[in-house]
Length: 454
Image (tube, rainbow, N blue to C red; front, side, top):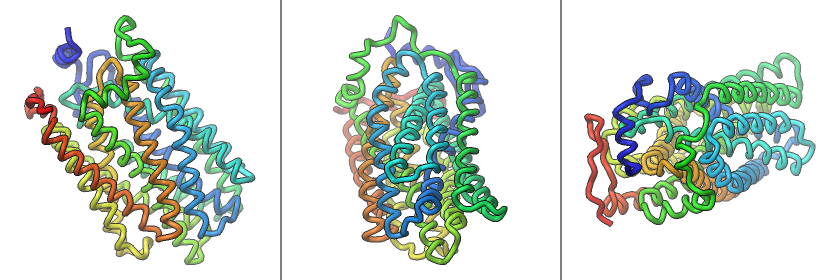
């Protein structure tokens, strides 16, 4: 029996969780914990932007003119570490399962946060950022792999949208709580900026540790394929590359990941930094200014959350590549529009940040839905690992170049750079749509297959 027919047979069974049809063997508890994982993992990882702004100002008193470059270099450290571990994590996940790696990743990310505000030099800050990054790579890699594991084909877009909604809620909650509310409250309570920064980071560590426990006990055990079906390690290692060679839609998903994952980091890093720098320039306390910057990020995230409901309502009904075209086009417009923003903290800038949030989540949604549909079942973790590696390379380039553009050209420059990259992916997606469109999920839940034109 082919892999495709096996999947088709599985989809005759299973149950429904909210609007999502899930595969047999996935329980409601698994789905509840997955939704929490989508909420907590992405929310907690975005705190690094606020945490970095706090540490650079409170620990080092770094001049504003240097913060863009250092922030970009810290992101580069993050991506170097992730490039080193994504492939390994994907192969291990296909052999032993997702749950163990997910829990370990969250715990390691929490340890990175715990150490971060105790850095006494930039070198130490880089080392602590590397620890955080190792946990980040394992946890986000497993989150994206589970997105491909749990749903039936007819509900892939809905699960991506559902996870995106919880992603957005997590980002908003973490940003508002640990960015806008807690640091200024601690300062107002009499703590100096450094102590306030350390307290906030300790709380974030505790949440990461508790989340790791929840993942360990609540997610599905083991790998999604039977032991006798598991591919040899050597074949798993090469499967990420070979899948892209044999399937142009996977290659397209990799190129979309190159841009889409840098979208989120550029948004989180440079929106917060832009608002913080603007606030400090106006004479605000660094903790208060970081809160204003985090507020801009929260605003964009709120727009993304609302937009996800619209995307999820129709993306399962159209061709996945067509969906990617729509998503990357929106991202190109949203990011490029930041060029017209002069004063980020002014009310007039709000529509631009709302459009930015719509563009960011669109690119991420389109890329994730495409790889979720196309990743082979037997090597899913390895292919998603390669997908994440492409994203890490994109973040590596966009953040390093973006940080220098932020300091030398202007705060809007990194966003315009990403807008241009999204435009290039849109063109590539149009070519793939013409030559190798893939399937179209029909309205009744079945799959209509277009004839491959390769």
